[in-house]
Length: 68
Image (cartoon, rainbow, N blue to C red):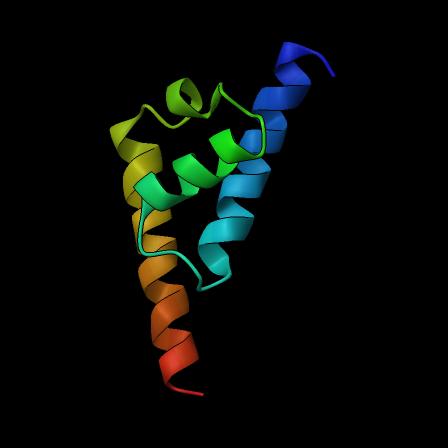
């Protein structure tokens, strides 16, 4: 898998993890991705916009889970 493919995967996977409701924020997602062997996650998630997006998705997923 090339660098662009890995970064695209990190982008998709981070959104998927955030929407799962199993994470509280971008830091946990980064740790998970790095644990899966995607060490580029640190740089890929090094954006205030991306971090806020993931935090918002996590919060929304938690609200959805608690209202079920």
